[in-house]
Image (cartoon, rainbow, N blue to C red; front, side):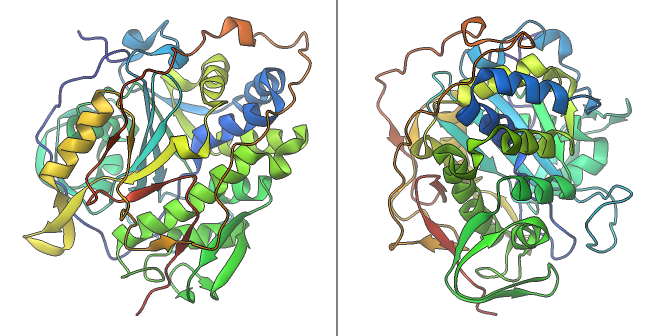
Length: 425
């Protein structure tokens, strides 16, 4: 059996990819990476170890079926970089803070593949459109049931088809990457994380109003948190051309602003806020059993601690309109091959000059993101079992040239200040 934790797996099926569903609530994944990263960025290893150990107590886990292959592998030192699939589903727990309508089945309405380069200088977050039409491989679901391979399936049904492990295997087949780690977050996790960091500043070019999500914003800059932040991330009809493709680029506006705030310190200068952020993310997540160790999470955070906004790249998985159905999309073969090749080769890349998506534009009035001063480290305590010295240093950054992806691949770096575009409808 190949070592999926250290080398790319071969694709497990030819993937066709299609476009978006017209109804149903959407969950935004802010996620595990942001939560653990934030803890270390400002406070250092000791607070990270204490906070993450406490926050992971009682976290639900599921098996991806790769535990033997991942055992003993340090997530911060994987050859070729580490891959983590982050999923936001539309399921609702009893007692949820969210009243967002009825749920017809369970869907992975937001799916982001996070690839951390082996030298820890670039984090790529690839968003997969939920209405992408694909061929799904056979998989063993979280419930142990075998689900047969199927052709021409909507991507956001893979979670309901067999759970997190089936979504992971589908993305592995589409990209050719091995994905040894995964996590799923709830609506309430989004609300609590936005509250923990004191909100996220979002620029809007013109009114965004959507009765489905409940968002109503005038043109200008707004600090969004709680239910309003979730409504912004859920809105589709309110941004761009009203498509899920536009929603992805609008979500990238929010995520980029959030990451700039986390990296610059801002309100994250005190231990209490950092602990709240880690707790908000982890207490509202289900983790793969390969990712439920506090030591693993702290090592991941340490691998991210020196990354800068320009090194965080948000990308939409390349698609074109589905010739069978104008309301769906399929894989853009050439562009998807270019993106997959760069990720499999762990190659640094930037996006073209005109790479904005359907729901965002550059904010020419915003200052350029700068590298923040180093945050002071905390004094170690006897409670810590993970220390800087116990975490292998990242490999030295290579001198390999950075490539530019085709301009038809959309996205942005976290260093770019962008604005969401209100819908013209």
